[in-house]
Amino acid sequence: MSGWTIGFIIGALVVVIVAVLALVILRAAIGIRRGAERALAAGAQIQERTMPLWGLETTNGVATQLANAARSLEAHATGLAGALESTQAPRGNA
Image 1 (cartoon, one colour):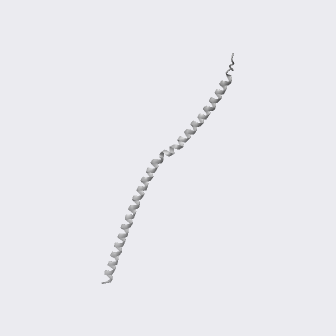
Image 2: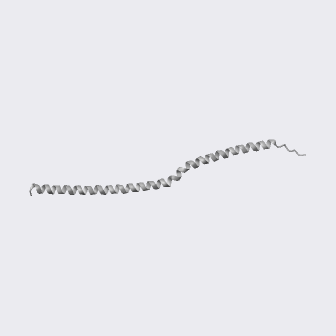
Image 3: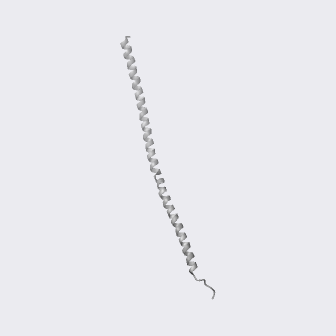
């Protein structure tokens, strides 16, 4: 075998090895992409399902306002009841 033949065979082997490595890398990249797509889909699903939790902050704020209003009404009603009781004449047995 001449040097040209050996060089050609070695060159062909290098090309085959590089092509195989390129295919392995390409398959790995495709697998990574599929995994990333699944992760993004799961993330979107999680975001959709947890969206109502963000509304709880508003709900808690409104509930606090309602509780404060109820306490205020109770205080005013208690004061009004006390005032009404004090203005009524005592009834004695006649």
